[in-house]
Length: 138
Image (tube, rainbow, N blue to C red):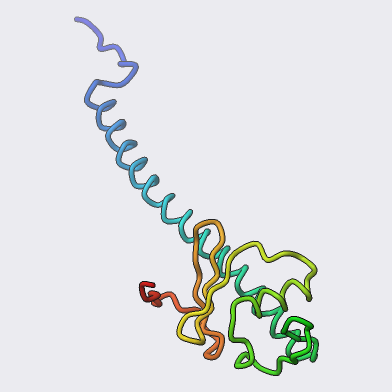
């Protein structure tokens, strides 16, 4: 009578099942990774825009916000800021750093900030980010 030897290793079916499971998990991770990258880029652009708004708020509150060619027009509220260059001018005077992205204004109150091909929209009167905002075609 032959004694059964303990088998060592895996069968082909076991290996096939393991590889299939790993493939499914890897494909799910690739999709999730793309979402994580997109959300992190959106968070970065919103943070940059939030910093710009904070600098401008501080300048207005302290009475240091001036616009105009000779910096002779005092800014007392966001209603005094009508052009993207007004925001840029105050930011660059307060921080002594060039604004890294581009600013636009839509509908009179929506500030659009674009940097590294990402854009964030902020309603500076309502004080909220506008993820649902779609600018009208020019």
